[in-house]
Length: 220
Image 1 (spheres, rainbow, N blue to C red):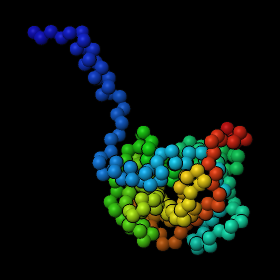
Image 2 (tube, rainbow, N blue to C red):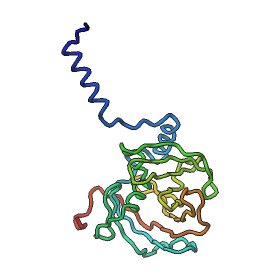
Image 3 (cartoon, rainbow, N blue to C red):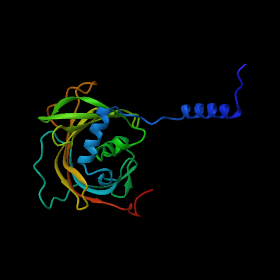
């Protein structure tokens, strides 16, 4: 008979425990390469937005509105804590779809430990050649993020029944890059392959201020 030492038994038990623990998602080489390019184009993880105040003009209309004027008053001011909470004025919002979209828009969704990333087939969006990453597991439904194949900037996000297309890029004084214009289009089929010709809404970001800490007057 073979004799098994106490040390060998302990090592076997330890190996079993390790195998039972949740294992990190490992992206394939193509996915990891695209992720590296996208985050690098954004200036690296430290330059991704985390907490900020946002003043914007939100319009629910099919006809695109003109570019906002310099002193546009806007119609909504929000405070956003990426991936966690958001407030409209000082009132807390409980709208998971918007939370997920902000998380994806910041690109921090792609770095979430629980996100399972895969590459998407190349396509055309807003006349641009687009490459994509799908983020699953971290949200109720997968989120598809599309990037301009030439610049590696975020071009669109597909989530649930809507495609959100981004343009008019700028950056904060601290170097956080973001798109000032967003146009949303409804998908006309469940497979998210046919997009309506006319927009459903548009958002123009008038002012964005990164925050080191959340304001004290926000609703808990």
